[in-house]
Length: 155
Image 1 (cartoon, rainbow, N blue to C red):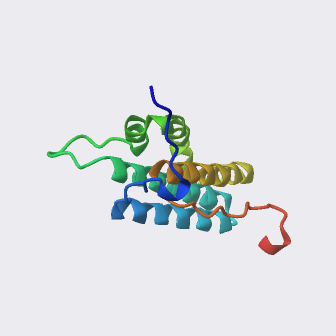
Image 2 (cartoon, one colour):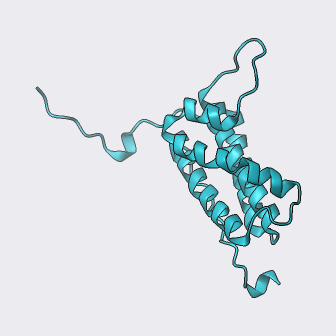
């Protein structure tokens, strides 16, 4: 048996190029995350961050799947993500559980989400998008500054 050959870092094979649709969705996800980080309303912050996560999931689906012929019953992006990228299954379950809260926030329900929940989701979406980028072999997603409720710049 021969010894394993180690290739220098500058000779490692590059990952396959990202399909244009996936790259566009990742860009939209990063923009949604940045927008969410700047929102002062917790409902808008939560809904926009969740949308960013959905765009990140769509990027993975765009990179790893091809359209199926014929009409099929629509399925949740979160369900599909868990099937197509099992390594992201826990993330898919987490974000699927927040879909109803996002809908309530988008509907403007006053008690839909708290500032803390919105802040936590912005942080979690940032972590999710970083994992998506790593999974797809792209560059890092810019991490937004966390929203601080008592920040003088937000008043």
